[in-house]
Amino acid sequence: MPDLPSSIVSAFELTVAMRHIIYRKRGTLLSVAAIALAVSISLVSIFMMDGFRDMLFDVIIEDLPHVTVTPKEGDDYIYLYHSLSDRIWDIPGVVAVSASLGTSATFTYKENVENVAMSGVDPEDFERIY
Image (cartoon, rainbow, N blue to C red; front, side, top):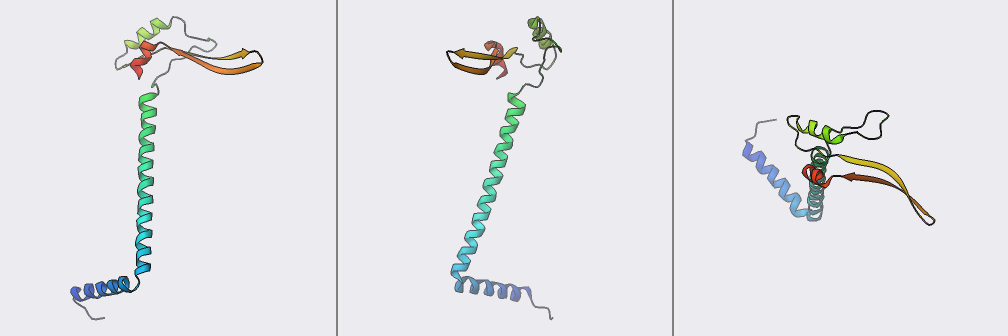
């Protein structure tokens, strides 16, 4: 095959592409629409994954406690938790400390019985965490 100048090859390719676009308008339009739809679906899914990752980061890093202190095995709650909170505050790098209490309970009213999970916090300490 003889070497052709690049301007002739590009002009030939341009001529073939223009002829295809001019004579097959419907097929060209459908091809462009299909590519545009595929690209838009890809972009939407990428943006949704990025937003979901940011949401997970916010929940895990910012909203959940990094350290949770629980009672010893066999105990139902931590005795003298105020002194424990003061000792935790003395640890360098601690930003917030909040004590919480959680238990399960059963409420009854006439014939209705409901199981619930009760939880309580000190609002002033809890406000510092969030």
